[in-house]
Length: 405
Ligand code: ADP
Ligand code: ASP
Ligand code: MG
Image 1 (cartoon, rainbow, N blue to C red):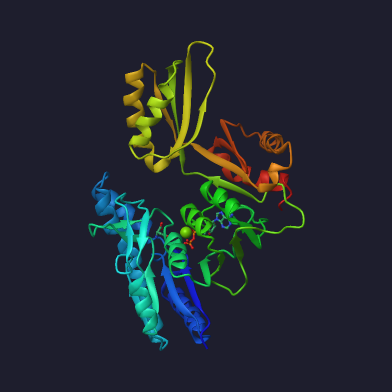
Image 2: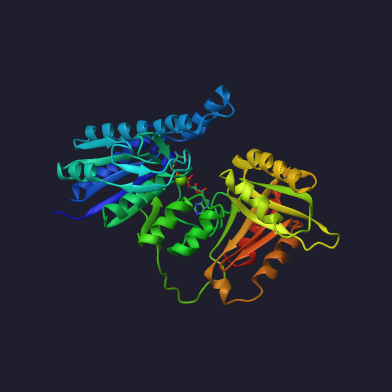
């Protein structure tokens, strides 16, 4: 009996070794047996991507981004072929395809390319031939036939984008935890699994550091209303549904706490207090392809002020180089870089209707002797920059303060 089309994505830890690949093959075969058509997206085995990055650094500390994409895409190419072989062994027909082969066309921003089109004709043809289609995640191809990758965690994006293009009935993201929790369960063992979460909350949590889903994949899911089921590849328990609207009897004040230790803080000292300088500085930085996160500038009392901002740590060296250049041009002082920071955030749509959430957050941090260096807020989140070593302690303190444990 035909049951519809399922897109399943298996993350690195789910395919980390031979036995796990065989387990994934069994799960996929089980769905096939029930009559589903299957498109299976895989990440590279275990820590392969990190290992390839480390290897490249030993050869060239400033590698060409095009070559980086050639290198990193091999991880997913290997795992897709291995999974196809494991499925063959169980007596089912499967074919592995790279991002380029399935027609995932991206722009030319190597290492963080955006998908511009997916033709998917090849997938449809192979499905029609009765095959289970295994797709190497995290990658695409430019119109000039150069291989690109979609940013760290990008296999999630491959899965969501394929689910949308193929109009799949289900998009399942299999990982090494049972779903999306109120905090990283590896940091807060008392964290609770959420049965459902809205796109907006998940987007906020993902962009503030909850690694469980790549934030860009949630942007796409939200845009095209692709419901996602995040669940464990190690058991059959239901996980977390990420969807447009969640009906909760009572709105929680916050639904999650996140920690991001991958940011660096850059401070430009003694910026003259003149209109247009912030624009000049951030134009220079963004012109270098750097995403600026939090920005803090104080009102000046001395005709000079300090401006601090955060960027992803991988872009910190480049950001400092660009900032120094522009600081000199506009007559500002020293440029300082601080990598010893972490961003701790609380997220929840409930904070819209509950006053005093920020005060409670600051109170909890103060009680644990944690100093706040920067603060930023959005409609549904509050973030503080703190010293890195307090990150985990802050997660547990806030988790308990807001009654999530
Ligand atoms: P995969 O390799 O399957 O893509 P990731 O390592 O990218 O897996 O994401 C899963 C990890 O995300 C978990 O092991 C967990 O430590 C981490 N994580 C961080 N925040 C959360 C959260 N709120 N809920 C669940 N997992 C989280
Ligand atoms: N292997 C890639 C990474 O580690 C993509 C992914 O896992 O989704 O970032
Ligand atoms: Mg991931």
